[in-house]
Length: 186
Image (cartoon, rainbow, N blue to C red; front, side, top):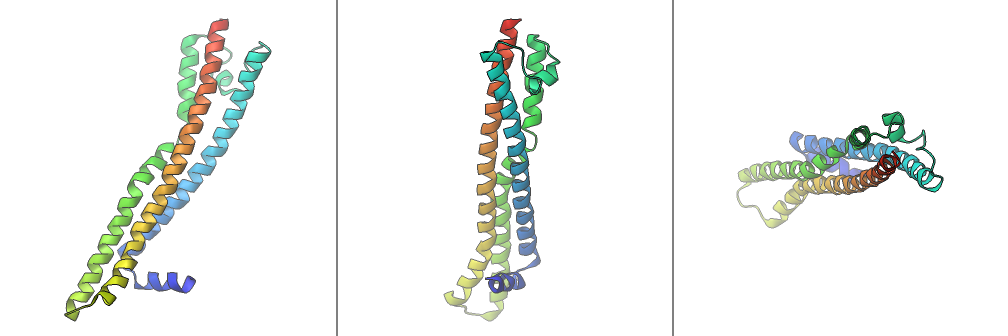
């Protein structure tokens, strides 16, 4: 397997290798963003969930661990709480848009690598006169690896984006519920 990869890279052009390196960097980036954001969001959601439970079950004030409490400094002003909601969600969703950008650009980057690979293959074959399918097929299949890599990266980026957007929505729900209760209590 490693011999196959090394053979592929040895026969690839600089553009194809650059495309694969860029897609590899994308892959590392999306996993880093996903893991970091998922851990941060899970922690925030847990704190807000506990705070909401405390607020609804005991009728006491909002938990000091709540991001809403930290931002509003205990104020129950509707405008301050709304501004805090916006600030918390903005901070919680930081970096998530990169997953969307990567999911939409990765296939095109892979396609670019494929097109360059195919063009280079045809340029090599142009000097050989008549070339059969058995010669062209391996060259085209090697060029398609870049497109496959782009789609592979895009699938993870899109999936991670959807998971994190859902987590941000969940966080937003807990924060809005707490804010509404605090405003109602006055």
